[in-house]
Length: 101
Image 1 (cartoon, one colour):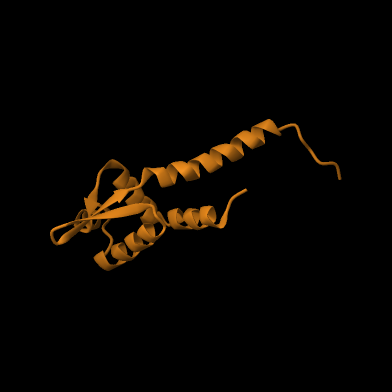
Image 2 (cartoon, rainbow, N blue to C red):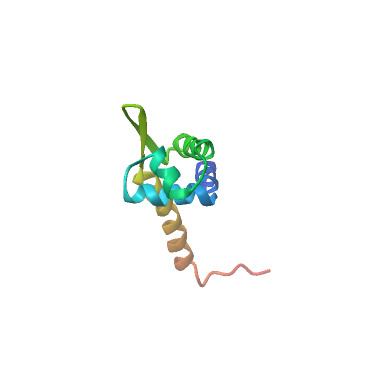
């Protein structure tokens, strides 16, 4: 069964810009300036999305001088993927089950 944490995380990742950020951060650690260049989003908009991702535990920050770098936390995505894999396995195991009306 999905928990509220799972559904909150799914909502966070459902936003197209946040999903784009996560995809970019899967390849390398980037600062806000890099993410603005890659996404074309305004810096303030991007910062708001990064805050949401950070609060959800999807990314972590690394200060570097006057810049802040963002790194993806793959274990968070793996945990969510594991929940979906568990649901798929359960569906396969009970494929022949049907409740009568």
